[in-house]
Length: 68
Image (cartoon, rainbow, N blue to C red; front, side, top):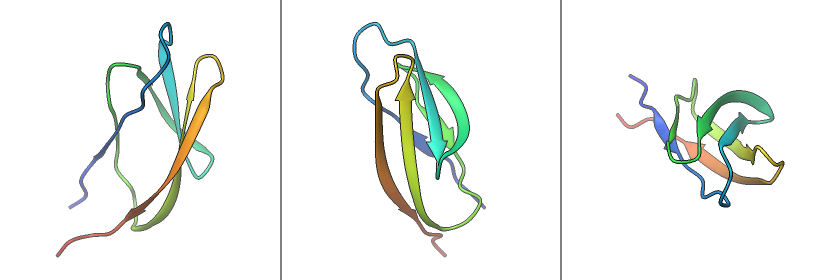
């Protein structure tokens, strides 16, 4: 079965919310001190982007594969 991947980001002081995107599609919101759990629907290469509540952003590419 699928397993969730914990996404985390370090945010500046005073930041309250993080908004998560995969390949430019919004997937959810988390607080700055909690991970966001994402379950990829398929294996592949994904661009994960996080944006804080002041507009600062960061992104990384993540490759997912399934173990047998």
